[in-house]
Length: 171
Image (cartoon, rainbow, N blue to C red):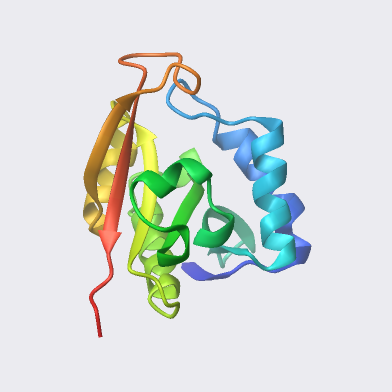
């Protein structure tokens, strides 16, 4: 059985191990500096990680990171004021559990957490041609708002990044 919850700070080392073991591929942009900065935000309370755990063997099999807008990447200001958004950083699920909707569920949990904050939108990015990420993001309700050439981050395929948004309904 898969259970979902917020990660504890004590679990961050295990999350990093999972990310470095399962995350690298031709579509993902992972750097040591970026991963360390993201995990520091979790430690400081400016971000949170939602985890999927295989309850039978007590093993974390996936996670997604929700980052407060105020500490999100500055380039996102071209889309929305940083104080009006949250940003989803890394999302990873063990390949042994792929195809079960776990990544989509993790995104949905991040959206639930974002709805508790005074924000209007949640942004996420992916390689334009990453079909697995495209599917999970679409299923969670994200829509593409921009696509641009991004050779600094993307070394394969079109080398384009897609920015997607999930607009939070006004109360």
